[in-house]
Image (cartoon, rainbow, N blue to C red; front, side):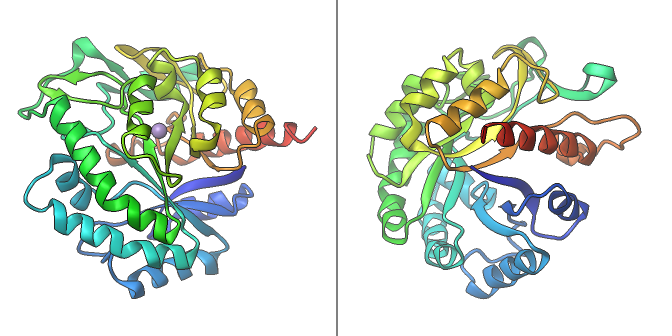
Length: 316
Ligand SMILES: [Mn+2]
């Protein structure tokens, strides 16, 4: 298993924290369009070198930047040029050893919460979702269109992924609810994820095992992990309490998901993918940043330490 942390490309404290926690690899989140040209070898190399000089090796790109991916998901007039830009990055990424892309196929609405300050253990603040608090947005897309756009994307992109050895790791919808207002969502069940894998089969198409999403789908996590072991390219190590219509995030050691058991399962099955902790509680005296709920520093230190402990335990 490759322990990673999720970092922005502009150096901040989280880089140092990750390194101090013994993390050697990272998942990168690219800046917006104006700051970073995804087709530019120079931009990639500069970004890459900053991480490497710091002592962190980038291995995963997450997500496909919205300014490209939105057009691909919606299948609008800019879809083809967006796909062309994306695949232009593949040989550059491959040359740098960034061989995995975590992507999702949620259109209009990304990961969605209705609360950001629910009190968890010791008053740590977490995000949550309750369908009765959800306010629909003025947008619409059908299941059928989403499947068509998804298939179109795969047919265009997979030949390049195969050529350059880039693994595409599909992230399920969060929350996995089939319809939010008039916005349909398709990656909401294991059956649909399997369909998504089989539509255009490829060794370079797999999944991000985002534990919480599969749990909220009411799937048997151990069964999914065992059956999909060849397809698990990336893992989001996260916990939660509740169901898809009403849930809250928790400290990593304190939700419904048996984290130690799953870690043992991954390693027993020989899964050797990058893994990162996901959303963490905001802890006492920490300032909330409305732009990055779930990504505060202190909770992260705790979560990374917890994950390292579980990983180490799997060695014995
Ligand atoms: Mn996730």
